[in-house]
Image 1 (cartoon, rainbow, N blue to C red):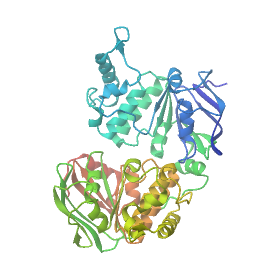
Image 2 (cartoon, helix red, strand yellow; image 1 turned 90 degrees about the vertical axis):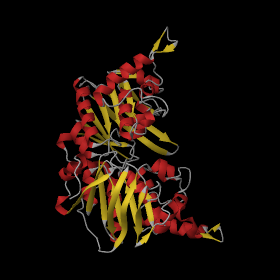
Image 3 (cartoon, rainbow, N blue to C red; image 1 turned 120 degrees about the horizontal axis):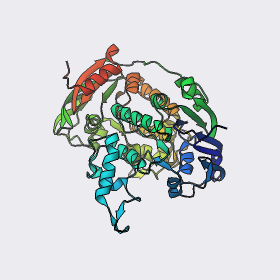
Image 4 (cartoon, one colour; image 1 turned 135 degrees about the horizontal axis):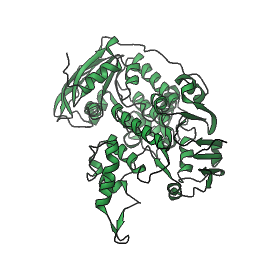
Length: 499
């Protein structure tokens, strides 16, 4: 029998009457990068939570190097040589990088009485040199970019010399260049016999770094495949249980200008942005993390205060340029971090949908529940919300369905301009396709759309034009056959002015 580093057999877990996992088998070989693939809600996170001791399985067995282990808590998983890198960042903002890395596992001196901070900094620096030498172990982690904070999470997992490392969406905040460094690190770890579990919705990553994949659907394992014997289409078909059509880009651009941005600036974050968007147009904005893309969208949406410049909708300037005026002008933002900035987790779908347009559902200051329910049901039905339950708490929905509610919010508010910041971040393949179709549907209806995305294939797939940003400046406008990965990368990295 082939030797496995990790074996999970017959793992089951139910919550009430809902089966999260049903008799799942999962195994990883030494020196293997094994992908765990499935749509949101397929059971991936539950399986990893059981592996890392966060949750207890109802049934099943786990063994490491052939020895049965009981994952009663995260410490028992750590003692078994298992490290977990979570998608949601786990840190204390006020503490330094080194202090965050050693939380719960300090290096001590004087018989364990004092924390040996010098030793912690030295060890942290040693690990960070392999990942990102620019990160200072003494720097407060709150001062780092999100992408650097993600790298610190990876560094923390390497402290214990773990032999099994599970990575849950480790590149959700990384640039392509930073992913290249991560891929090199994964290759190094693999060569030393470390087993890695890799969870990602990005198929290009799966095909680049993984050897095998376990595919899950509805809490069950549906197959184990060798990555290089498969195609993206064949894996997705197994994952969702149906064929996902790869649609070409349909353009609905008209010559009617809806949005015009004139010399819009905010300190060094955004510098003299000038462009326009027409009805039916999807304008993509590309660039590296820190290029000013998100800052530009927040300026247009009135979330941040401008230093100078104007935002004009249908030839009417947004006067005070705050959130309220932007909404009244018909500008709606779908933010990058939907959990922190896009939803109120404990409120129902219908109330989250109505947030920017409550006045539309009030009569004499009182909420017209009938009108709200009718509108919410119609909008969410049109957006294919699953389950179609407007009373359901939005925090219990998958990422893709939460995103539909946020999009529906601006449809209900009759927005003219839709700003999408990383619209498919943390969303599975099937839901991505739906989001793309929704964006195309909005364009077809005459909306002006701006999409910021770090995935170049996504930008190319959905955009009529692309603006490339670098260090707060628009460095190039691309259209037609000029919209390629090579051109986007060229103008995102090189300091070239628009020609």
